Length: 347
Image 1 (cartoon, rainbow, N blue to C red):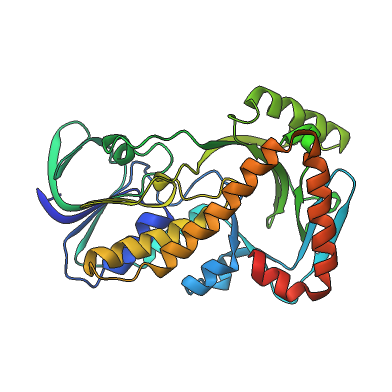
Image 2 (image 1 turned 135 degrees about the vertical axis):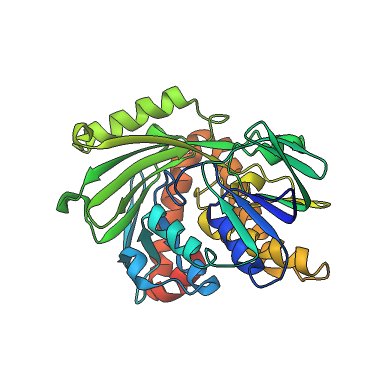
């Protein structure tokens, strides 16, 4: 590892790897640091919407399942739909990360270090593993919800979804050809639950912002819902993970925040891979060209603002929340005559 790099990227997730890919032919010295020993693994539901496919040429071999069927399940209504084209692709995060890494691993201008932790961030430098000081001209914090770069910038991080899920063996009772979104205030407040079918397993989970609904109550509601649906989780693997959606900016002079480090996940749906890819790409292009039009980033920010406003509205609706869920499903059912346009709108 050298003592000076033009650009340091902390975090080799979708955002950091996408930024590195954009920078690989720039001629600039880049250092990509990942604290985990292996690039790619992350606990999440593993859904990739087709917006990401428009952004990157992702090979079909990475898709565990390509889903054309969906179900919105409310307290009193269910809407099932089938689309002409896949609306979401289920992926293994480690394989996706390794594919992204394969695009940069032979780049002569990029040094990649795993099992390496940034223990301090300062003006123009970072400290590696508590001992080695490395200087930068630009720094990209793509290091997730607990970003050390975000802490250095003293950017608050208060909006975080609590997510719980089980990975269960594939079973036809989960309708393995269909993604399911369950909205029911009784169990999940203004949050929701999901059933995502992967190749050999079903990922069943739920999420909510603890500011609106305590995690203890979410666990209780989730357990009750699982029992009522006769879902045996004793044969599965339990996972929990935070999702950061407290966006407060991405550009801080020569320091940038990308992906969840910037709070770019959706507070309503928890979607974050697409936002991470866009932010990594756009920030890298901005570093290379200060006049770069951040059109894609601005679209992501508008998309998130709308979704987060809906999230807050659902909280304050109180006892009317389930009525709102059922009304939404009714509206989707009416629009469902044109499932192609619906898919384009929501994926």
